[in-house]
Image 1 (cartoon, rainbow, N blue to C red):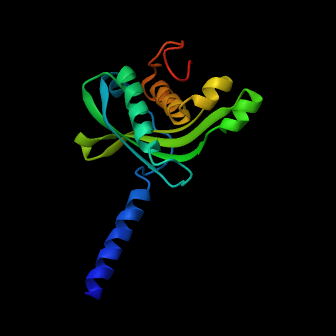
Image 2: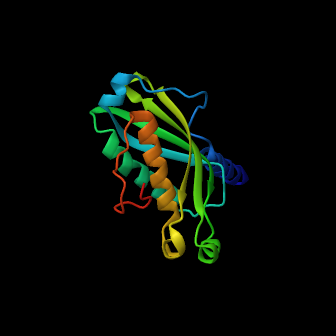
Image 3: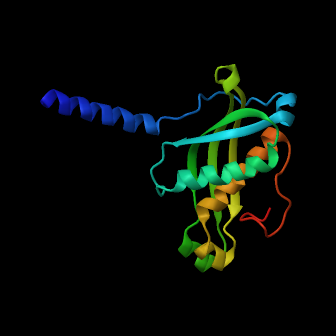
Length: 177
């Protein structure tokens, strides 16, 4: 009985630590080959992180927003997977934005584009650091900070990996840029 409890505890602990392990391999920047820039489509996004000061829904929001941006800039047919390790997130405090009328949400992450047809070979690697304005007092207090910084990350990834911004500037998106 004790062996079963210890085994189950170790299994649970290993699953917990595996969930926190980075999904990226790391290394220097690596640009996508020009042919893939034009023909790629990102079919899945996996996110990992070591930081603990985040709401449990950050990963879901991040993945949704990044996928939305990538659908607008990587519209080819050749399937790639995206792995992202978020190293740091700093969201402007709601009270700070209310008092000062300004603030910046920041995110730093490593993104790797992986080709499943080539046995998971990394075909693109991008260290990305973004910042976006909190949006003034009203938006800064009521807005979805996670969505804003995640969308900005997705746009930056589109720019560096695929050479195009998926959105024109305007009020139709959270970051307005």
